Image (cartoon, rainbow, N blue to C red):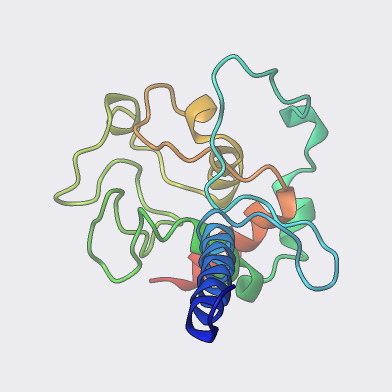
Amino acid sequence: MFDTMTVTKIVGGVCGTLLFFLFGNWAAESIYGFGEKPHGEEVAAVYPAAVEGAAAATTDAAADPAYADVAAKADAGAGEQIFGKCKSCHKIDGQNATGPHLNGVVGRARGTVEGFKYSDGMASDHNPWTPDELYAFLKSPKAYVAGTKMGFAGLPKPEDRANVIAYLETLK
């Protein structure tokens, strides 16, 4: 009915198709960050985005612990890993990208990086980025600064924000 060459082509086609789908799954997990870690911990999306019309999150500022409470346990090493979410827009080599560079951001006046065009909401406020201000801003940038161009949805976990701030404090 079928010769050996035809059967080989069919089996090769099926195997090739399976490999294609496995590669696509691996690529999607790498890009979008969904799935589970090896130890069963749930992974948050790499690029979380707010969806218009979605129900508002039930966590509010009153539910968050104060920055001073979580800062005592902050880990700059963990913050460096979490900062990976920020690298698509911010650099730490003194060069601007989609967002301004973040070298020396802790204590720096807002909206003052040379050569970066800030949104009106960010450019109008030159108060310094204190750890407390960054803590509140990183929770939900759009809610904290009206009209910001920053499209990042924020870091809802207080520990993640404190860890990122601890890492940013190491950058001069």
